[in-house]
Length: 331
Length: 306
Image (cartoon, rainbow over all chains, first blue to last red; front, side):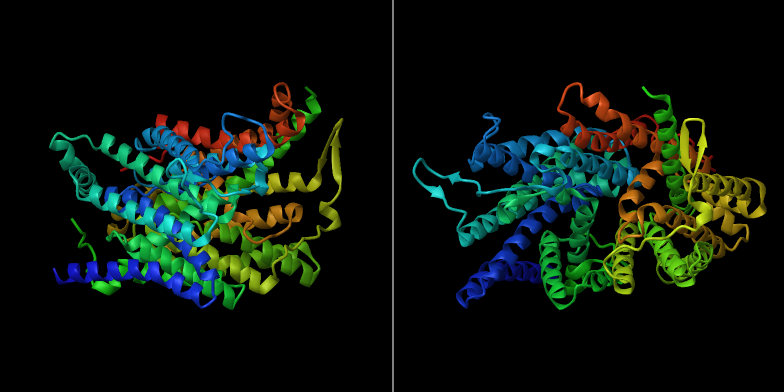
């Protein structure tokens, strides 16, 4: 109970810090912090969606970066067509159109690949999800019109028209940051609601003991497939944001090492907590920033840290803070 | 279609298959016997290439370079096994994946620190340069050397696994690890030996390809994923499966790259076809794996269990 109160307090503090720090920093003229924090929030959304699969459903998908890539290209391609002409159906700066594209493409891809992948277990599941994301990687590489290997610049950010007259100007960095932040809150809320719903409990139970769930007359396949699609859609959303953030999309976003990094964020933060991915992504981005400023060989301490966290730091940072013992999972 | 071109591509496919086999043999053994996913296998591939390059340049002899690379790779593999890998055997696959991903980051940066960001080229000795022609077909000698060494290693591994006592233990380990250790076999020693053999084979693969492509940072990080596809298709723990699957994938990839663009050129522009062909042949490999996983999750040649 005490740890739960601590947990809630810590999470609220973290969310508040994320809201305030970039603006305070900008006020003192260090505007690049807004940039770093935007990236951090976007990656948190992606990592949270993966943790829905990993922590709740126990599905170690190693191809989650594919959805970020699909979401990003759902912005890149329409903007490209709108700017340079071409396919009139896809073309457009309209953010809602980008979102619609991203959501439908990601949902479809997750539905098809999930239906196949979920027939496998354990290491085969890891490998087949990775195989599907490699397919997307090579598919994007092969799209020569959209830059192939080199990727595609996104000249303008998406236009989100709220009412007929009001347009959300996300070219303005702090408006874009607030948009990402609100979406993160929304995603965390949805994931928390799902985790504690009937649906989430079935997933959780199937992770712990699939046989028993089946014996109770519930086939977890459909539940897992829905979770797989949902996680894909949320990751696609983060891809839409990422393309807008970077003004650039490339097949590099889908490389398997990117999926590995998302996993790392979750493990670093702690798999048992809703806010674990957020904490993990925060540490990941800040570490990356400071280490890469300090030395070009920043992957070395990064790799050592990853090794250390996996070998010795069970439960990640959340585990360290709340001193939760191994094996003691949240319901 | 030109018959000589087909033969040339067949030799290229065979070479890629052999290389994939060298990389996946160790992977399938560590996976099958120790139940360990080792992404860092890619690092031994890279280290073999870099150490061989450094040795070749220092002693001015490719053969001394090869010998040094094999010895040092073996020593490094033993050290890594004792320091890190040994702690991972009891962990779940996700932990193994992440820890060995960390090892890749460390190895890549380590190579960057020692040899700088650029790649290292390995000059071949005159004996291995030149070409042999069979009628119209002209084949570089070195390609034949790669194929010969690979086949030799495959034969050696087959002999080791199927005809020797050590091999019997390895097969027993792949079938039932607990039974093996309860029969009084020192499993730790067996694990170390298998890990080192696998790493040396990967290093050998890296140093064999380096004279053609040059040693570069992260050179193993793409091909390791293909090697995983190989062992999944072949059946985890099966040397025979790894060999067959490696050749299948080598041929699919090579022929796809070589001939799909001609096929695609019928319905798209020549330039688009040239970009699309390698990507589509890479995709084909993963499609094959997905199909096999659905149809036969245990792979083509699964080792007999229990």
